[in-house]
Length: 399
Image (cartoon, rainbow, N blue to C red; front, side, top):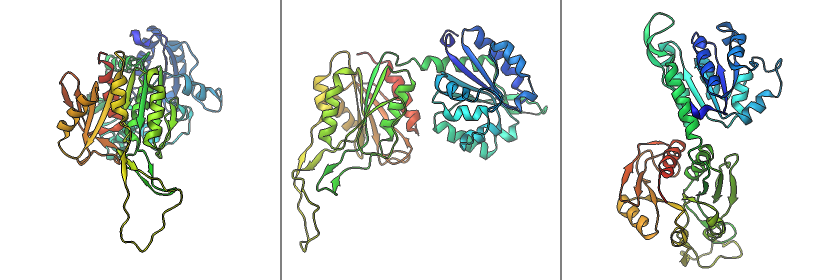
């Protein structure tokens, strides 16, 4: 439990019979050197007393949003390294999935950006209820971590899935998350995201369908994995930058090139996820073009700067450069060519015509191609999940 030492872990205990088992986890976390703060729902207090948890955590237990310190939930939300919900009931999972914050625990969770480990425990019929499973899916896509309940004897005396996991499994999951949070410790990460716009006139432009979701997810996950600094250089998107991430807004390929080259030397991990336009109008008109009687309009295009190739030429030995290849045909052939020609350490290749993939959906399917010739295809997953998987693999690359 070395990863727990000195970490602030908030334990949310909900109203299920397994609440008494959470006391053991709290005790073990406190013994490992973690700073443990317990929050109990009103129903939880019917199963185990706050005094028990206060004795084990050596801290006051919060139970009432208005009676206890009115601003404590804000402080906890900002300072926590990890939230653990155990047992996570049908009720709390439904509240979280629908943004309901009506007590101390849910209000604190609404404000935090720390990882949340959800440990469900309930009767089988409740756990397998389609509504519960839909809520679980929704929360998983938002980055909440779930620890699968065990199958065995339940509180009702019946056998089935929904049993509170063993203490060893819970402690291991906590250790893994906290270890992961330091995966990129000391690393400085630069991410590009979104499309570019190449203006034809003050109103019209050449652009593409990139949403920026992949790049924004990479920046968010780099922050959560403990990167020392994360800079996101973004083309025009409708997305809000992740909290705690430096964001630089650009519009054209030239602006993105200038912004990247200005900062390139400051970073040791560069992820070029932006869909930069390959062509731009040779002439941009000062006034909006009007529709005339002519049946055709000829626009002369010229190449935009090849930012990735330029970075490949400038890359130093202590820098890792990652490119992205969105293709419609000959995926691996084109990706390998990009890997070699642009002096990359890794290419993330995806077929944008494949079901579950592409720029405008929430999921993606990619193949990772490494400099040493290895390749690995990852299954369909959300872009947030994919970003975490990609960064895990990049963290192990040698410069």
